[in-house]
Image (tube, rainbow, N blue to C red):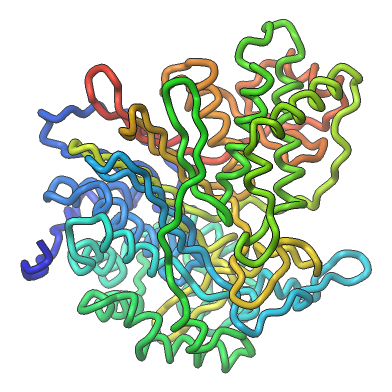
Length: 550
């Protein structure tokens, strides 16, 4: 397949301009689309709107779901520039190839440079990191993993070459597009930090002023970088060639820590998913350092509680909330890179542990004393999630990010390459399983997930929205797998958010009587949104595929 000369994937510019005029980077709910094997449409990609259109076109031209989702992700790296990029700190991808009866995971999380130490961001006496150097600036950026992960997924499971699927992203970067309100708003909110970095200022300001919604935005330097990477081995060129030298020089000039050796040592890797059975289905999600363990742990607590069959008039909501808070306490106190720290993964996912925690939850709800836990809150920004399926039976779920808007807020000027702030995802306090360390991977919240029945994929799902991601993905899986709601209803059902403390965010759809129950139990309730969930799913009876983002 790869012996064919690369051909440019045609891009319907009229459709693109019409779409982006409404706002690239804005979370837009895609309509449900029904597809069967007889349809001319060969599959479905959902997520960031412009990226999804690119993926849809790759499917239409003969690519499979993996080709489509990788091409869509590369396009997102251009148009959703505040959320992700090829200099982003990474994420995970879960893949169920047709006919393989197995689920695979690509881990492309960032790694800390060799010079990282556990006390490099040590907070002061009041818990503040000096000048927030773990979030902003060149020390906040580790080795970017996004490009290596996308390239590895394509090589392992795609049909097309990198040159073919990156072509729409090159065109978007080169010719430009009307800037969406999501990007423009992020520029305005981070203006002082953007102005502090010369490369970011040149890229994201026009005549010294921030771009506005609808302004034409181009990144020709990024287009040239992608064009360079499209010939030959993209990963080798980026991490171990002249491109790597330029990136490392930028770190050196700005007192960053990433070196050519750090870049050359980086590898995206294929890892085994975490799994959990439910009825005749099986959940497969990204392992640590992704957020999937928290989803499966909380789901296991609910199964141990037989939560779905609790009486409707009981303390059902409080039981579910306390079970989720238990999982968050474990997440924020016990989890980190299992290759560098001792993390009790097997215990946390065991049935005996779930039974024990279920008993603890019931006792607390009966006593009226919620779990005592007060973690530090974190801003919920950045991130793009894409889910894809094709009519041949392939499914994939992929999440990628800079972190918060524009990541570290620094740019490798020569390439128009914004760097993600993966180092901010470490716990700044020394001695924690998730403290920084040489070549350590930070804990993140992304949890792309695939559900199978009889070893065949039926759902691909994930979310965007920082720490809200695990909770929202868990909400949909709980409603669908435990309660039995059809997927459209499960995605439309109200979501909530907690990070383990007594603060509880409820979507507007939650009834006021539930709000009163939570407040009465001692929770501090406010109205707000959950993560943005993007999912595709296959109807078990007809084989048709549905997809939506909400």
